[in-house]
Image 1 (cartoon, one colour):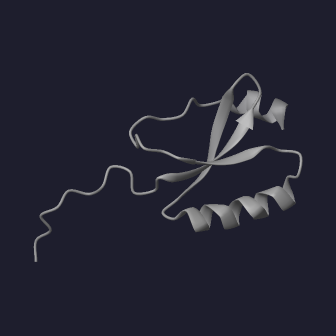
Image 2 (image 1 turned 60 degrees about the vertical axis):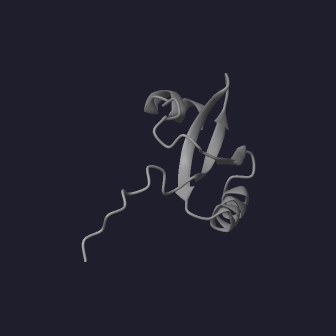
Length: 77
């Protein structure tokens, strides 16, 4: 059987983002289901209680979130 449908552009719409200073954000992980994202964020909150994380629904798929340079990220962490 030959597949006739195109692959979905955004097959992992649920994202966990870490909120950084100056309105920056970093995508930590992507999931198919919100329930999976909620379970993962609970683990992150236990491991990193001072870090701020949020679950977001990415409708664009093609648009990337601003990337943070690794040196800046290490400074923040």
